Amino acid sequence: MNMQEVRTIARDNGIKSGKLSKTVLIRTIQECEGNYSCFATEKYNGCDQMDCLWRDDCFTSAKRALKM
Image 1 (tube, helix red, strand yellow):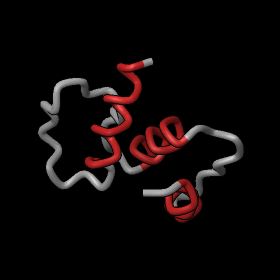
Image 2 (tube, helix red, strand yellow):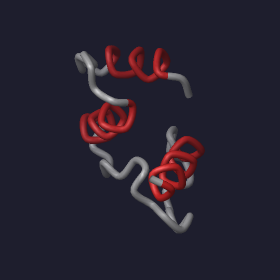
Image 3 (tube, rainbow, N blue to C red):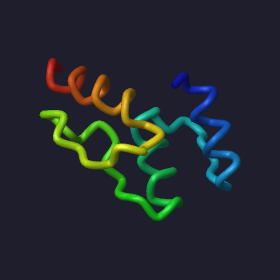
Image 4 (cartoon, rainbow, N blue to C red):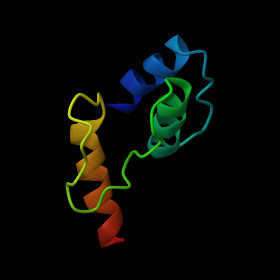
């Protein structure tokens, strides 16, 4: 999901995205929705949240963060 799509979801949830990174913004959305704010924290694909909107981006971002 691109950043503009994430900002739209944030705005729909009453969140001002400002200069937040994609990761922080998605975690904020997750919290607002009453979910775990776990985006990009799973390192071994062990997530049990199969219906998560962010699932595909989450694993990609987590793997990218490991390389840094």
